[in-house]
Image (cartoon, rainbow, N blue to C red; front, top):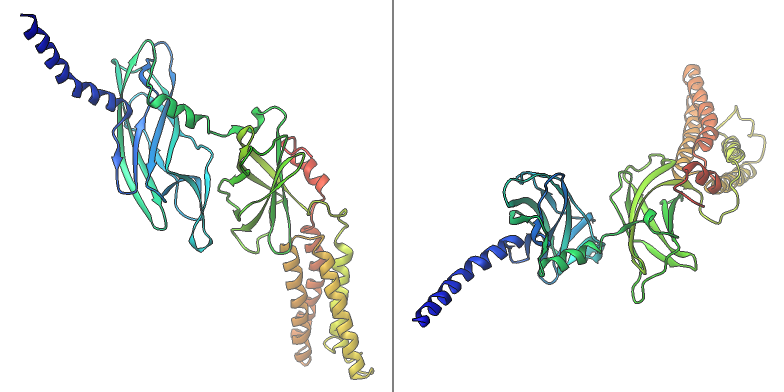
Amino acid sequence: MRTPKTLLSLILALAALPFAAQRAAAIAGAWESNPQSRVRLITPWKVAPSPSAQDIDLRLGLHFTLAPGWHVYWKNSGDAGFPPIVAFAKTPGLRGAELLWPAPQRFELRGGLVALGYEKEVVYPVRATLAKAPGDHIRLSADVDYLVCEVDCIPYRYTLTADQPLGAAAVPDPETAPLVDAWWKRLPVTAEHLPGVRTDGVLEAENSRPLLEVRVRGVKPAPGSAPGLFLESNDTFDAGPPKLMTTDEGVFFRVALKPHEAGKPLPQQTAFAWTVTGLTIGSLEARRTVPLIARAGRSPISPPLPGALLAVAATLAALWLWGLLGRGGAARAPRAGREAFGFAAAAVLCGALWGLSRQVSFVGIAGIELLLLTMALCAWLRRRASRRPAVSFLLALGLAVCAVAAPWLAHHNRLVPADEALAAAGPHLPS
């Protein structure tokens, strides 16, 4: 008689296995799959703590596995693509859900393009607040849009769900808890929370392109890895590849920047945010207001006004010697000698502009050169319109205005010495 009862119990137990497995899978969330990737919503608990008297912080994870060669993106995707977008609007009682960003990788693509993101596997941690929830479980629902890329890129959109049991005592899930915890530990630490570590930056104005220098003091590269710099998207500049330098003080990066608006004067201060990876302490992140200064290590910057006045004087002298100013005052000298002295004045002008390039931003230099060319054009047109007094007067006035504007523009776009810039930048930029 016992054998049929035992057999019946075994049959019932086997029949219950699919339901138990289905419930366990539902806690982690079902995979949404395509040829390039899989994605699911996970939590670190079999039973999550239930909110009672107050709200609780809830950790979730957006779990991707990727086919070989394919990647998804960091919050700054690089030269193309876009990062995942997640919305939990359909989950009642869940507030303030925030997608977090583990330390990324850099991918060199065809055509010199760069992507910032993750390959093979990544869990994007999600931080949220759970308010009071009715019953003993909550149904988590997230709408996710993401782009997966190799050479070509393919967008996907899914609604991910997971049924999370709630209870008075939390019970971790042995499969997902280590996974969520491992990727949570890959989140960069804010620099202010790292004792003995300081990070700052300076923006150097060059004639061709501005350069950003990011400095992290009090750190060392992790054994077997090279530190990497990842800049967040910026409203003013696009960034080139960083160049690493290591010293006894720490690690330094230099990055060539390209302004979004060519010809616009560079701001005296710019807000940048960066993540640095490959350190013995892991990775760190920081947000700093970076001042515009001269190249580090240069001699003190002298005022640009004398150089600008010399450039204007050399331009006027060249124009006079070449017969474009005055009423033939230079005609008494031999023509060959007059032209030779004119070219000598032009050489003085080039030297003055070269000196100004070390004192004035590249936008200021471009403006000064444009004013000097306008002076030459006004002188030439005035010479041709000598029989029209009104036109000649207006052109002479324009020439005079350009001659006065050039020194003003040099002063307005002068480079700030490093000590002045760092002092003006406040306590977030130690020298």
